[in-house]
Image (cartoon, rainbow over all chains, first blue to last red; front, side, top):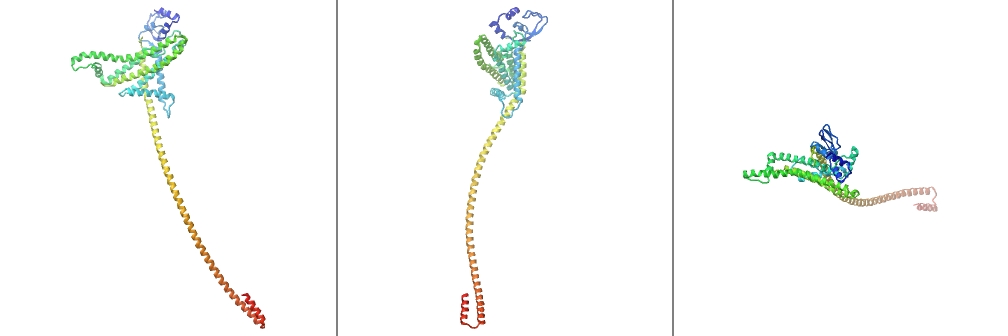
Amino acid sequence: MATAETNAHETELTPNTYMQHHLQNLVLGKLPAGYERADGEVLEHETWTLAHSPAESKAMGFWSYNIDTLGWSIFLGMLFCFFFHRVARKSVDGAPSGFHNLIEMCLEFVNKNVKDAFSGTSNVIGPLALTVFIWIVLMNTMDLFPVDVLPLVMQKVSGNPHMYFKVVPTTDPNITFGLSISVFLLIIFYSIKMKGIGGFIGELTLHPFHSKNPLLQAVLIPCNLALEGISLMAKPVSLALRLFGNMYAGELLFLLIAMLGYWQLPFHFIWAVFHILVILLQAFVFMMLTIIYLSMAHEHH
Amino acid sequence: MNFNATLIGQIISFAVFVWFTMKFVWPLLLKQMQDRETKIADGLAAADKGQQALVDAERRRAELVDEGKHHAADIVNQAQKRGDEILEESKSNAKSEAARLIHAAKAEIDRERSQARENLKREVAILALAGAEQILMREVDKNAHNAILAKVSSEL
């Protein structure tokens, strides 16, 4: 397995290896002692290192990090915080400038959607929706960088010509699931906070089938639990997979176009223009669904 | 789909970013915008008020101008009337003054005439006496008398 990977690195670049290389994360993790690495080196001790092949990253197990996507994700999140905080801190007398307007436009847009879709009152939902929207827009926008530019820069900087480097965080399911699981935890938290544990369990077990007869009700409870449980679980899964799927597909198309030679330029342009829609739309959908799910969690039945 | 601890890293960073936004971005920005909103609303209200005040002032000005015009016309009328009155008055004054002066002058003339007459009478008497003296001092000479008498009468 390891030798096969080595060969793949050394052989001529094929469309297959090109694609695989681009879809592989830069993984930081711990390899166990005695592991034979991709270049044939056998580790004497367990070592924290960067994975040099998909097999290595798999061998690192759960406690490894995709430092490329996670790094970009955190960097972009900090960018968002930095710019928004800078604008928020600076009070403007008279007419605000262009960038200030842009930030306020984002805030107003999110605030309007929150007000329209969220029935309760909460001082978490607004900031949450704003963070989700802007952060996802920024992460998706990384897709508009030409697919080879940033990896190439990174390979030159690091001196490793085979370095994996994924720049679009939302094409990593870890990132999208990280977001959707956070939302899911908030859904559960607010459901319990607003309705109590009994109310939350009741919501899961007493709907949609309900009977006055206790015996019949006892039979209906598992059915309700199955239905409601699935619909509850479907929320974070669909949330994460929708975003991931859209961005992954977009990235794949960019990669395919990148293999067209000189013809790629107009196609890249066309697909990038179209992709701008996807970028904004997916961020918007994620934000709206977050608001709606939390609104549902706040509502009593 | 390889799931690894990136998931946890993402959840933690998400929590941190949401906390940061909740603490340092959302309330500040919202307050800033609301402040500006009220400021703009106040400004617009003030502008409306100013507009109303302008309209009021315009009306007041028109009223004042009208009033002033009327006033001025009144004053002019009055002045005209007064002027006419003064003219009439001075005319009549001048007439009466002229009459008085003429009267006085006539009186003066009369007085002077009567005085002159008195003087003349006195001088005639003196001349008559002087004539008589001459006549008495000389011998009676008819011709001489005649001549003297003629002389006296020619001097009257």
